[in-house]
Length: 165
Image 1 (tube, rainbow, N blue to C red):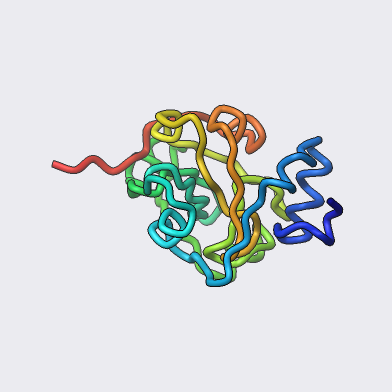
Image 2: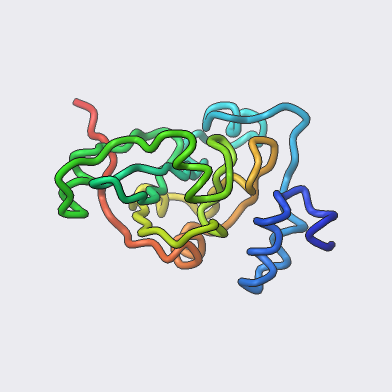
């Protein structure tokens, strides 16, 4: 399957090829309806919500950083701030997300971005044998073992999940 035939975004399909992950192109699933939220993606795939890997862009003192989080959890920005030693961490604006990654919110994959950013991956992702992540569009996802996803994203494993009381 070529990048043009892939259900993945063409830039992401090219990134898979560059990383030697051509076999993932064949496992990308495309849905007729957008799955812009983790819950919509989990329902479409038929998996647990926590098996969805959200790729979220934050701004740490104005510098974009990618946080990979399981779909059932929220990111604690104070833990991200402490992890990065930043003064302030906020959710990045939609234009910053697209400018940084080359993808729109709802379709940001965990790697294959326009620019290199620091990547943090929450340990909660490792609780599963397989997680599902966006393949560059809100209509497409791909499966991958969490440890491989973390490695290909160049992520640092951290604990930045919001704790519920």
